[in-house]
Length: 237
Image (cartoon, rainbow, N blue to C red; front, side, top):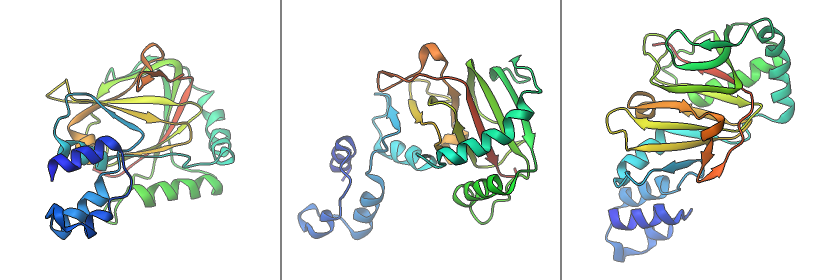
């Protein structure tokens, strides 16, 4: 099964239900069901050549999701209109307390207008399971055009199993690097107005970073990164 799944993954074929009807493969029903679910190769992930194990790819793809066009242009403007006046009161900081961010400003925001509250409730419904308790404060991170988020793993002291963020103003590339085997690298294309959801192995076993302007590439194509604001929801530890 592994060889066939590898071929399907590489091809990026989207429909495998015909496998159920083809008994020559000799697979069990659950194996076929799993194949149908996981063999879509997400367009927003690019794996380094050091990912020979399909199971690792599948697990990471399951734990690192991106939903394009999660908010509309009007919803993006609504979020920006609410956070921009508050951010303008702050100066861009060169360094972060944990040395993870350069050229940024941030704040924790509790109260939102009714339109933006609905947007954030949608994030929480999609990102968190019923057992999770979302943090009341939403993290707003403003990254200057030349700013970067350096490789790090978020501390479990401050947030729980899942991080979900809306990307505003600019496309960008997030890079995941295995914390032990540094050759295992995955690039994640975060389109403007997309939502990323990071949990499981992506959350705990990989560092994540936002590539700076000079290195912002996805599948060897330049991704122009401008100023980027992310609206981030987290759950309790």
